Length: 289
Image (cartoon, one colour):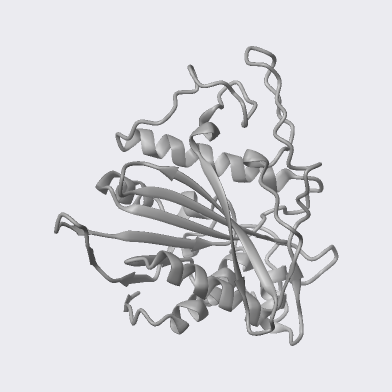
């Protein structure tokens, strides 16, 4: 991964808690279920340690070239990572040694039983209803970690020149669908505790999401709505420029970067969508780049 992807745009807006102390909500918007951990830590961990509420929005399913529900395992991995960070920050969460491996189904798992899930929806101006999943880990009475998954497909079937977010941004009338997640792929049946580790790809908490399609405008409107619902004090996004990769011959209008020596085009275009959404919010945030 390039250092380029770690650049963040920060929007500052402070809010007062009921006790009168300054508090923040911190949002991070990324393409895949590891971009936040690679490129936005230790900011995220420090926010959790401070007692801030953190929301991370994942625009794609991150399925890569894999078939099946590889992306579902990545979602569960993200939740396990954030549970670990909450523990490091001093919050009490279920211990896998005492919590049945009822959802994660792994010898080192069991963390997911601490999470809850809800589904939210928004109707765009195209009169299309779009839904997403919000997994929540409540840390205290006032702070929580929310992981929001839109599950749009990351890659156009080979031999495409561009990833979906890139194609959606650059190509008129383009659309991208979400991955399929029904009760067959999202069952939560696991072996009894003590059995051999099971690495099957079931969706976390059995959470399904009806397959849907996004246009460029749909995605911008949905991300805008997600931002407004959370009303964050700060928003971190990936680098929305092509300055780094273009120095090595990458052309954003034609090329998908298939390796991490330069950068992943999904990073760049997830940031384009994020920035476009931020410009539409009524929060009038202060921008610091």
